[in-house]
Image (cartoon, rainbow, N blue to C red; front, side, top):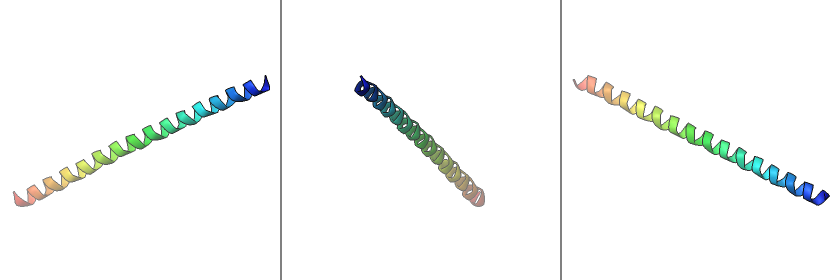
Length: 55
């Protein structure tokens, strides 16, 4: 009986760890998307500035 309780607890802990991993992965993915957007915005700004100099 005690063994079953421990097994259930470890499964719950395992699920909790999985959830934490997924949350961390989602956070990293969102951060990466934000980085890409900021880089593209910077690039666009630099291109506009160069165009204005040429214009």
